[in-house]
Length: 327
Image 1: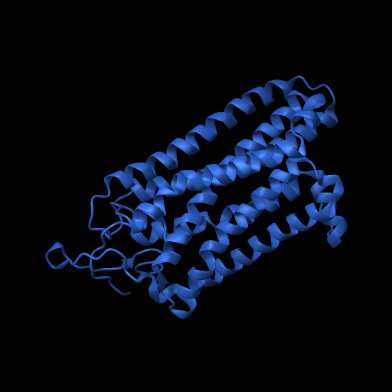
Image 2: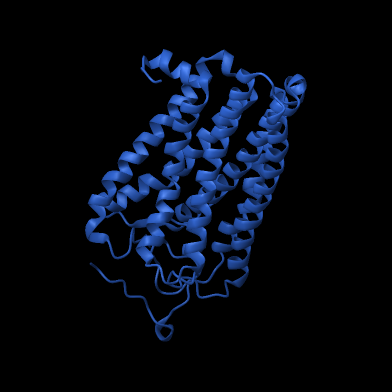
């Protein structure tokens, strides 16, 4: 097991933009990187295949060109971007010891990671709104959620993600950095680059604003989105309980259950990783990093599986297209 040595305050030298950062991978487990990469690579492959299958089915099946599946396409694209923005570089570290990352590439990766994480949270809200309209106002669903409205919602989610996260790479590009450019992480996560209680200090400047803004974005955005989703589902539950048709009741329950499972999986992993990363000082660093890595692997794997199993229309298309004997 290798040990990282970082400069003390007495021998720091400021410089603004290091040409490269060094991503350690999983500190303390460098000797096991090759073995750790096997399940990570397998999970990434499954995630890519599963989400591409979802997108392929959506594109080739006109009957699925409705708002619920449009939002599912957005979720699949977001999952692909999130996993692809982290895993290839991560595997390069584990397999080839390719630890260097260009300063600009690091900031770009940071932006993509956090921007699409915010977008994913917004997609869950859009999906909850779609279920609310479909169940509580079924006769008006096609007039409320037209293709034009869905496109506007998608654009709004992209703009929200970009605007909320834009300060991260902008501020990071202007911080004075210490002599060390070693990031004890597998990718350029914002707080790993700044200054975190459980991660060694990389920036020499005052990062209070950055730490505060990061915390506000993480919990205010997620908290607001969860509040809207909870409100939507409180109204949905009331409407579902009034449904007399057993078939309609089961269909509503299946689509809502799929969305809830996907959303809870993602938010649970996010809050668990974020809270342990910020307040779990007694948890070893390699546990922090592994949890952060899994955050970009488990949801992209589970989302296509959950929707494929719970939504009959999608399950039938998968079975018809690939000849699978799923029950």
